Structures are given as C-alpha cells and as structure tokens.
Image (cartoon, rainbow over all chains, first blue to last red):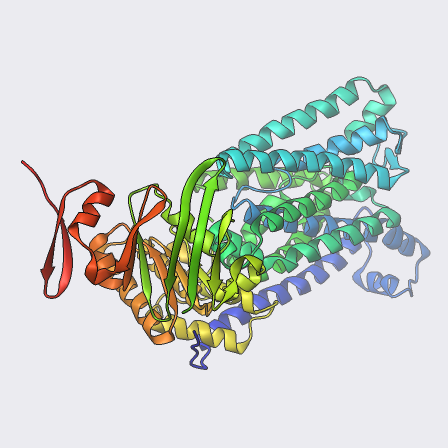
Length: 356
Length: 253
C-alpha cells in the first residue's frame, strides 16, 4: 500500500511550531527564574552580582560563598528533582493509562522513603546528628539509594500485579497507592518508634522533602541518574502515545507493550528513589506537572515529556523560592508548599471525572 | 497469494479455542470471519499478527513466516484495528501519524506527514485533523483508527469488528472505505463481523467458525441458509434484493 500526495497542512506545521515555542519559552523562563532564585533569600544579592559570581568574577567573597555553596546547589536540586519527578509522573500516567498516576499518588515515594530510612537507621548508611536542616548526613549514598530503589520497586511490582488482575482503572490505582503509602508510612513510623530522641528528630526532619539539603556531591549523583532515566523515558514517547491508544493498538504498531511498561515503571521508580533518598518525599509535582502541560500543549508525548521536564523544574524551583518567603524568616521545606498546591489539583481532577 | 494461514491451533491455558484453522486471502480480497459470540474470532485475528502465539500452525505473508519476524517487522506487514479505540489528548493528525511508528525512529519526516495527510483526505477526516480525539464521536474515532492502520502501509489489514458501536451510516461508510482501499491498494483484509448482511455485501469470502473449527468457508455468493442455521442454531432464509443476499431469521409463531 502506497499513498501520499506530497502535501503537509500548514495548520499542522504551525501547531508543531507552537509546541516548540512553548518549550523554548519555558526554558527561557526557567533561566530567568534560576537567576532570581539565586538572588533572593535571607541575604538579597543584586542581580549583577549574581551574574558576576556565576562567571567567577564575584566582587564580594561573601556573595560568592552564598551563591556557590548554598543557593546554587539548592536551585539545581530543585530543578533536578522537579524535572525527574514530573517526567516520572508523565510516564506513569501514560503507562498505566491513568491520569492519577505519579510517584506520590501510587505510594512509590513512600516506599522509597521507607527504604532510605531503613538504610540510614538499620544499615547505618547515614549519620543522624541534630534536629535541624541537614540533620541527616548520608554517608553512603549508594546503599541508601539502593535500598530506596529496592522498596520502590516492591511498590511498583505490587502496582503491576494489581493492574494485571484488576485493570489499571484510576480507582484501583489510587486505592492501591493509598494502601502502599499507608504500609510504608507505618514502616517508617515503626523505625521512628524505636529511635532515640536525636534519631527521631533527625528522621522527622529528614522525611520533610527539602531541596536545601543537597551538597554538590549528592547533587551530581542525583543529576546523573535522573538525567539518564528521564532521557530513557523521553526516548519512549512514541511508545507511550501508542500505549495510550490501547494495548492491542500498540502491539499492532510493533510496540512491545509489556516490556515498555515494566521498564518505564522501573525507570520511574529509580528516579523517585534517588530523589527521595537525597531530598525526602516531595509530593504532587509528578501528578500536577503533566496535567498542566497537557492542558497547554496537548498529550503528544513527543512534546509533552520534554515540556514536562522543563515545567517540572520551573514548578519546583519556583515553589522552593516562594517557600523561602512565605513564613520568613522561617525557611519552609518545599514539600509543604507542593502539598498545599497539589492536593487541590488532585481533588479538581477527581471532580472533573479523571478526563484528560 | 498474500496471506496464508495453515494448521493453526490455539488454546488458552488448557481450554482449546481454535483447531487446525486454514485459509488464504489474495491481494485485493476481503475475508469475513463469522460465527457466534465467544467462538474465537478475535483470538484468530490476534494469532495472525502474533499478538497471541498459537501452539501449532503457520501464518505466511508473501511467503514470509510471521512467527519468525520481530514485532516491528510484523507491524510493517500487518495493520491491526482493535475493536475498541481508546481516546487520549492527541489531535487526530497525530493519532494517525502514530501509524508511521514502525517506519521511523524518532522524527516524522515530510514523507510521513504527507502520507498521513493523504489518508485524512481518503477518509474525509479533514475537519477533524486538528481536533483532539477525546472530543470526537465513536464513528469518527473508528475512522481515525482505520486511518492509523492504513498509514502503516501494511500488506495485510486485520479488522476486529470494524462496525461495532457505529450507526448505520458510519457502518456503511467504514465498510466502503475498507473495500475501496483493499481493491485500490491490493491489500488483503481479514475482518470479524456479527452483521451477516454487511459481511455478505462487503466481503469477498466468508469463513464460519463453530466450536473452534472451520465449519464452512467459500465465496460469499455461495453461502446457504442451511449453513447459517447450523452455525447459529437459528432458522434463516436468504433472499436476494437487487442482487444482494439478505439474511432473515425465520420466526415461528
């Protein structure tokens, strides 16, 4: 069968260009936000000084230290975590053909949190010192991440099994997510119950998702893992489009549906595990971001996923910057803010009847 | 000869579904697979493109054995239109473009886009091209699914109840398009059907499945009331109206 008339509708070309413009515009916005975020804080640094410090020609040693040791790692951590969680959410929503999918709503974040806590307390892969930000120092990021990954895979496995038996309807998935979140939160509480005072305080602080605690070393591990994992997920955009059209249609298009689904959940769990290990549980970014982007540019994963990556960065970086001011001089952990933003969106999605 | 199925048997767990099914479909021919609910019509379709693996038998497309091809190679040769089309937030153009997936690695070329545009014209979907498919009707969605299978440029087209859930006008439209594409582009088509009248009108050949085996197969012109009665367990009469066979159930008072 061969047919083509050699014509490409102008309207379609414009439509694609609009999406590319959206992604381009988002990247510019992200760059702007990054500079603003670095400039704002307990000590406000004028924008020209931010630029000078970034290119290594800072006038003030104090500004240089604040920017390079505090502000930049925090901003980059927010960007990496935001983009990773958002892309993982977009992949899960496609793979499970379910608009309520995300690392947080499916309980995978909680599983990873338990795994990391287990590793820090029982396996001694971290040092707990005091009740403040940075209370837990992760001395062995590999074991911590591996344990977080292992338990997030357990959760993902349960989700796969349940979706095989009962189908991946939004109700089933969210109920499974509630069950898994409760289970692993209970596990974490059990660990906390047997902790001493210092450990307990450190643990509680650690479970608040906060991007301020990442050092350059942790950040680079997180960035490499998240970068490779998101690249893999974005590379599967065509497959996710096909799976959303139905398993049989996808198979008919040559997609190895089961393999793509398993590897997608595996990779999403890996992102969740590494982010949760270093930063704690940050909810709703993975749920909300893909929905915002889908409303704006549609659900074609070839554009949805790269755009989600950028918007995820913007959302978490923006939230973290805002969280520094809302209750100033207190610095709120960003997870508190994302939960306040995310929960209403979640309820809105339920009210709207899960439609995409 | 393009599609040749021989000695095909399939079982779910230990329950046998299909036994020794064999048939062939030539270029430009439509075969209608008929039979009661649950007899294994859809299963048979899924065996043809290796979505299900039969435990014996072979499927040849242009003398190539489908079961020794990769899923992507199969997608180059066989297009599949599922009975139920799922919606998502894609515009119809992109939903159809997905049919080019087996032919491209990442970027859709101008040629791919031109093929999609041609299919949209063929199925008269121009007014839908830029609309999200979660906002179109069931009949329109079914046409999008058909267009997607056509841009795959397959040699064999498998259609699972292409007219279910459609109103009369859409049923006729879809079947006419299928027939036109099959004739013009020398494709072979296999479709499962429940509507005997539509099957006899738009297909070239029929195949009745009963209890997992072929009860009877042949040219649509040769189908008899006795066969239909034996397959469905319901007495029928066949009348000819303007040269088209019409199957009518006989009601006994």
